[in-house]
Amino acid sequence: MSYHNPVLLKESVDALNIKEDGVYVDVTFGGGGHSREILSRLGDKGRLFAFDQDPDAQQNKIDDPRFVLIGENFRFISRFLRFYGVKKVDGVLADLGVSSHQFDEAERGFSTRFDADLDMRMDQKSELSGKKIINTYSEEQLSDMLFLYGELRNARTLAKTIVEARGEREIKTSFDLKEVLQRFLPKAKEHKILAQIFQAIRIEVNQELEVLKEFLEQIPQLLNEDGRLSVISYHSLEDRLVKRFIRTGLFSGEPEKDFYGNTNEPLKKVGKMIVPTKEEIKENNRARSAKLRIATLK
Image (cartoon, rainbow, N blue to C red; front, side, top):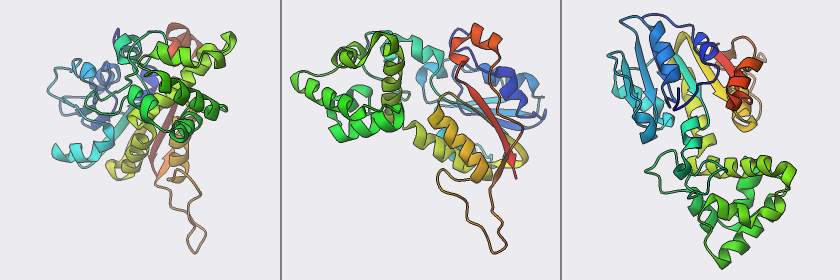
């Protein structure tokens, strides 16, 4: 739990409606909290596969014959499950976003609290880092990123300021970036605005929204007839995609109707959206923006 305090632990695993002999997938292994909870409910014939591309998370591997940890991005969920002879599963759990460990390890560059290299790579093998983005993206690319992923209204001004500043010297660390944008960070809103800027860079570095889309599109073919999808998201961009895909099977537009006016959405929601209790938020502040959505095949 010191690596990552899992949010909505009981609720998200309850959502999977676990069968003792079922096959389940935890696509965001992290500290292994959700995986351990799933394993505690499985019988001897049950199986659990987990994904995590972060080498730090892979150190938390669980020694259990029913468990397999796959050190890859969960956008490749179907491909790697097929490698293990698995075509269908009874449940998939995703706890999106950044783990507590990634935020707390200064050198990973995820947090605004530390003066560290602007890294933000969840996959340490990736060539694209936060530093590379800030120092090589065009003004237009930076502006689009800050507007779309950080939802910052002054994205153009921020991008122009970054480009002008890096012309003088390379922007290497989180504090370098903070210094460059200081005049746009009023004391009362500094933390919120910085969080939006860092979120935008992190999403771009890790292609988080593209990964989520690719993952969701594979779920209808992957789930058994009464299988469940349990997804915890932490910001509106993720939650919007999850909610929309569960409702329509699409990420934009509306589903086409057939001759009789029927649509063919692959999933249906189970129950209402679940949020953490006040007690959980008090114990774990990072739970405050979490939203859990559950779906099954239609």
